[in-house]
Image: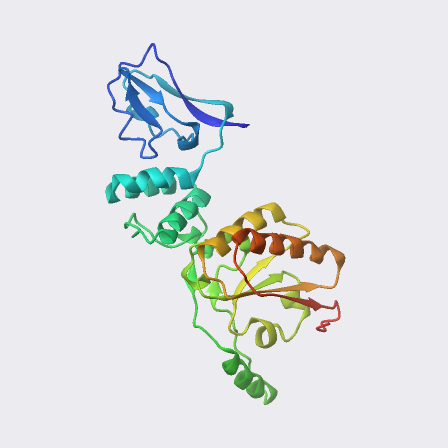
Length: 282
């Protein structure tokens, strides 16, 4: 177990009034033997929504060794309590800027085919009040490989080649696992130098695919593995293509992707594309 923030209940101050219970939609608190009790470390997110409802000041937050909070375990408990409790929990996460947990909660609803209540916003990170508007989830006009062939001909005649980008955001850490454009998609994961080095990136690699971008050298690949695992488990991904530069640091993502595919338990076709620093497809 690791140290994290979690609520602490002072039994001497607690009168068992129960005002804290409905303000903990996660279900971490129950009244037992006339006292409020933290029934499971798994259910307490440490955000302290219950603190302001205690008239006796019996609840505080401490940092101690505790079992890791599990959003999926919490959601299993919450959905049994109905739509209003689900909504209260989502609002709770949104108001505290917990975008990662909010993504997991909404992913749970999608995975289990449970309707997500309207809690103000239904999109991804960009919809969460504390996030940058530039990360708002958008599905752009879909393009196809056949369209790409026609545009490449027009480009040769001097016309501008249109973008094949069909989704936003594209950075791996910013893409919500429940984004609708991921389900049934052919995914292109590109090391972020590739689009700059490879002049035919759009028409040759991106056409007809959902794009995710990251840097295996500068970014945290452990977080990438976690996010990609969530995406593959929650969506019927058709294929994954990884485009990277020929430099050694770019090869680090290959193992991450293969581990994520293996962990999903699904047979997902995987293709690797290498681009030289001179902009050639090797």
